[in-house]
Length: 255
Image (tube, rainbow, N blue to C red; front, side, top):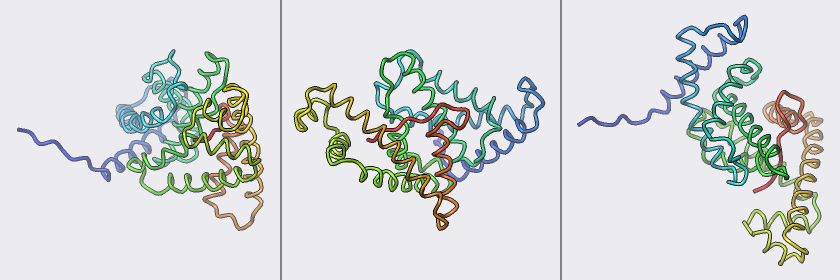
């Protein structure tokens, strides 16, 4: 009877680092998008796909069911990410295992948001921050350093500061949302006229949080004592919030 091989995280990390080096070396020097990839590059890309599929499955699992477009299968969302990586991967600045994961995650979330815009009257606001807040405890096994934990703690700190800037009523609604109260329950407890009134109030609160976070991020960047690691993350978040890159801007919400 054959024995099942135990999973070796250190070996996986070595494999993904080597695969990323081979992949980026090729796409950085290829003449055109149609240039055939050597077998070594094809193998490296297969390694990348297998490795990150597990990560992206967890990302999609964290998104509320109502925000997963029914018109597109999960396999299609993954395929969208792989095509984006092959065509635009040379634009990725942070090429570590964690950095590539962050880029792929953004591509997946943006795709879900775009499809939701296309096939729904309301644009969901619970994508980016919902994933950022929850995933840190789930994805440690895929990362070779504490980048996820650091990002998680940094974002949480700024989020709490932003929440403190809200009115008492907005803070209370956010608290109830985080404790998984339904819209009907919130309406009853907070004397809203209807579930729709709560939904509109919550959406405006998320928009206000986004504005406050932007102010806090810009204020932090002016601090000469800010460490380089935090500065790089804040700059990246600002780019994603305000659509300064190739991708659509990220959406904000709170769990």
